[in-house]
Length: 433
Image 1 (cartoon, rainbow, N blue to C red):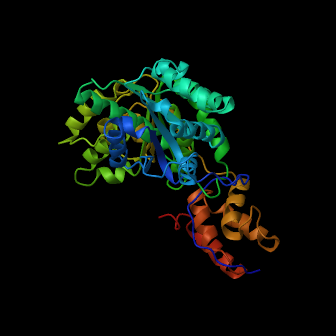
Image 2: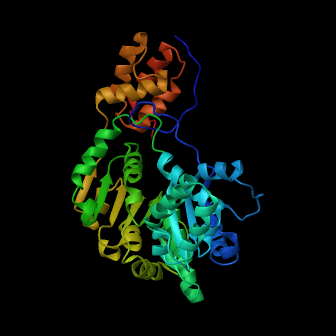
Image 3: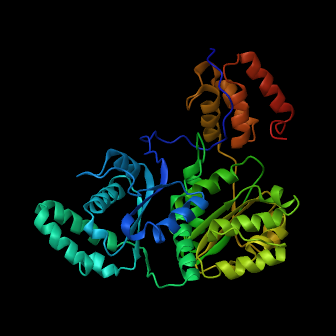
């Protein structure tokens, strides 16, 4: 039976149930503030810092025409933002526009699982929480002008927002303190709005391996640890660690996933480049690093109190570990470092005690994965069933081999399957060398 050819795709481990299409975010951040209070101060500084950090930010800067209700453009921008930063200032509550915006932002927090970060600029958090101080006088006017239901919604929104994790800053702080303040916000937000890694098109067998990994390091999730994930080329090390990372990264103060560590470190200034990337991801700053030794000092001094998750993927020499994550004590309590490598010798040298060896897929898992790539479904066509099982027997049962074999056999005849089987019997490694 013939069917349309498909182009090769990334290798994977298990086909999961189809889930609803996730909500698509157009912006990383929606920045909400009362323009008259903070447009030229903290809100402007925050906006510029977010843009400089590569965070796609929508700024409600009072340029849209003001009517009785917030316009559809703003509602759409709020709904399409992964997170919102709300800058509370002394006169914030005097604007019904800001209050309506806040109600919508908190609605999206619930319905779309968005992040909301309050910033209290020259205003006491308690005044926002309890609607006292300048907020009390604003609501005295609102109580007269608007119906009770609307006013109660505004009050509830302010109380909810003031109870969220956020930051407080007063205008008398020094320029350096303001800069640190803005940097802290940007680093936190950048961490939260990071998209998850794409893991695999057909993640066959992945869930069971993630559970094995979780069981191995259950104590390390709280206390911190270094774990080595090792196995042959194409076995699925990177796929497994991406999925594991996706389940964990938002639980840490900072996270960093460095790919192709071994390859990059061989290039000129490769190690210092990786050190800069590590600090950029975890600190939000692009530091100048003259040499690897200075990079080590910078990493230790900047990250010693931060609980972080770091993945070093594709390590092949001890020096790479020594220069990037030399010891768990370099980082805050509860940090986790995950190293993937083909060389168990590297793990021996680094004295990594926690290890997870990625084994080949079992025969049934391999047959399912081959079938997804060759036939577009989890079982082989009836007339190809025996050939498929034989191909699996000589495939080494690695995800990379199975993807390459399956993709190359899409729409082919039995004779072409026989030719592939003959090649595999002669040299099962030929496809990944």
